[in-house]
Image (cartoon, rainbow, N blue to C red; front, top):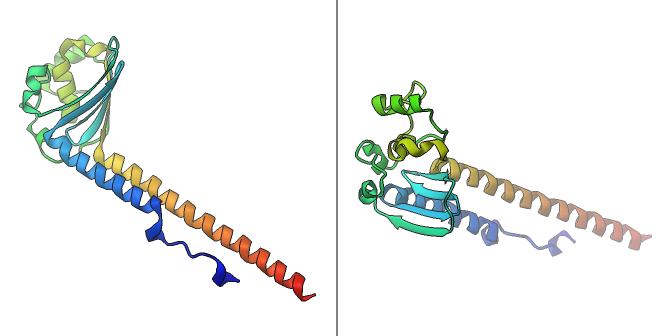
Length: 189
């Protein structure tokens, strides 16, 4: 009876191929974020792919939808100086996750003088955020997630889904085999 059960193949699984395509896309986005700054803004929340990571900003007072992509050099014209101050943003890098908060006036002045934040040098993305935001950073919140973190999370979820699929197929096979054995023993008596 077991030979009649279909043998699912991992290579035929849409889950495998969708996960691979998603990881390839994230790898491309990571590489693209070095030379381009892409963004999507919906109301007061915007997501940016820049400097080898994803930056999520909340800026009160904004509304509407907007998206686009620009090269890093014109960014200084947009009021976001920092690529000159932090040249490592133009290279593929690992970076570190960062959550920025609004700075008090003293902290902002100290940051502009020293380039340090909380006694340590910030990730360049956070440094660029405070440098570009100037005094208006009090109402803005930012989360920076490096692409390696995003890829690791996606790979973990993907591997978990593949394992879950494998386990559910095995349980289904065991149920069918048990039902077939019960059915066979019922015919013999």
